[in-house]
Image 1: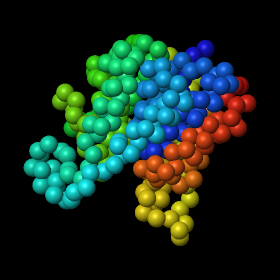
Image 2: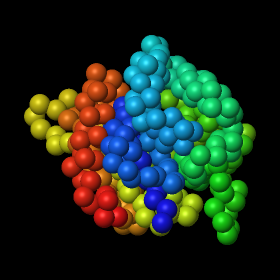
Image 3: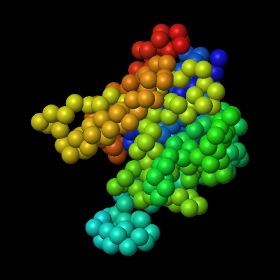
Image 4: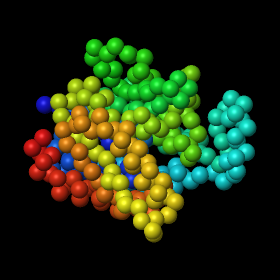
Length: 283
């Protein structure tokens, strides 16, 4: 039996996925196929390349500030370029190049350049092409008997693949690749259960995040994260139905870019997995 894991997006909360993988490894749960969207792709790609869950956690902490720091500058000044159909990158937003370079560097250490070079296990990373209004999958393996092979991209660098899946609207500029302009994969597929199944997984564990409650003490980021969670869960309803178990991680109102809660999120992922070991082992 082949076990697959599908990791959802969720901003900085994605570090919880490393905690989930660590708990699984420590308890003899072997993963054969992995997929991830947005921040889930950051963890999934590193794991597929052979990095340990704890090392993934260390990398997150090392690069988090550089990756998410938003450039200062008026966002409005870029609207004219957008309307004129020029390069869609608004001053004040991140290009995502720091993220891409960081991932290409860690990939080279494993003698990997293109995502297709990954041999450890099948990997799927969804992204959305806003130019063609279509979902594409960055992967190291095109599914068997696939009727739409053009949707699968194997010749992008690992850094470009995770950057394309993690271009959160209003934070990162769209990611260019060939004739595509990619934004966050969570727009259409926040938890890639179906794509993991297409890679041959007999059982799939979906990992998502609990939507925190909004009350009178909630700030703008709390409300934004609640909105994102609602949209993400709605978009992923069909995928979740196809999963064999849904592991939902609490995050204590960790914001999209709330790096101060990295440690807590990692621990939440680990502890939630430990608490559900009985069910995971049954699967």
